[in-house]
Length: 106
Length: 119
Image (cartoon, rainbow over all chains, first blue to last red; front, side, top):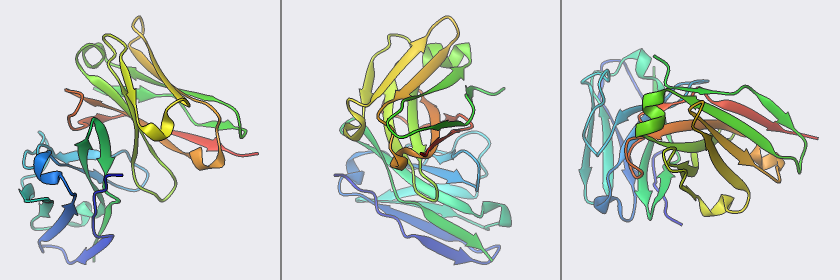
């Protein structure tokens, strides 16, 4: 079955930049989306169609893609950015999620 | 304005069925697709299926084929997910979420419904 592979966790200090990768065999042929989820809350869309940012999402969130890897970048990370981040793509009309990356802001 | 409002926590015995509701705004019901996604405790997100509220067409993740049903009530702009043959592994938070097109990002999510399967 199709998989999206993410690093399980990353830690950084406030003000630093974090890059979260998401690898999938056919990700280069499909758009990637990214979701932020804080404990006990519903996921929130932060990036769609690889690079687009929904209204209300801070500019420090950005997305990019290279080959079969999508990347979520958070610049000038703040304490409020501490959360789980999931990538997502479509494969044969089936939504697939990455296993998630826990971002800890120390 | 809250777009997707789900029913509350439910507890079921193994082997039973559960029905979770997701009430949408009229605009969402008429112009978006509704998906169901679940998240077991401490785990990731798992897509279950999709319904087009306008016409009622559905599609499911193969893992759930034969065990899940998605329906809608056009008079109340509500979508329902029925999951049968519950097992302890089905204990999870179930979310409804909308997308503008069928293979699109999920831009709005419901608040989630906890389903607990326990004997």
